[in-house]
Image 1 (cartoon, helix red, strand yellow):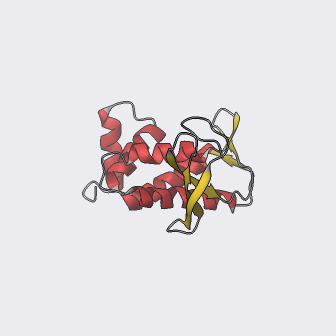
Image 2 (cartoon, one colour):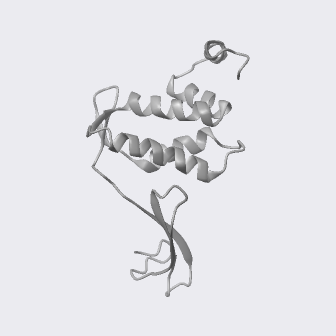
Image 3 (cartoon, one colour):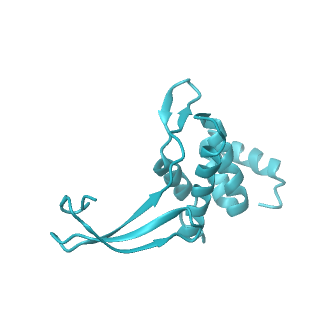
Length: 152
């Protein structure tokens, strides 16, 4: 594995252990060239997934993009990163085990909405504001009223 700091091609694995949910292997690595330490994750990829966007364009599924959007929705919320990783891993596993190789983007969005609704109400509304393309404060108000208002 290439060192992300100096580009040296031969790094050493110092420690390997499964993640809490067992969906990946966490490896602590060391670069003998620049003495840096870094972490990598190894995950099983069952199949190559393609996301079909609303306009018909196709793009490869990017786990990092999914994780980034969930992290943004959860920013400054009392949610540890391990719980977010479990949510992302769960969504990825559901997509891979669906049997489909081409998945509509709205399916992914709905899975994220479902996961965030049980994880954190504020993260759920934040994600919904982007996913459902809220344009003004009234859109937020209408969305929260549909949720039952008092619950969130």
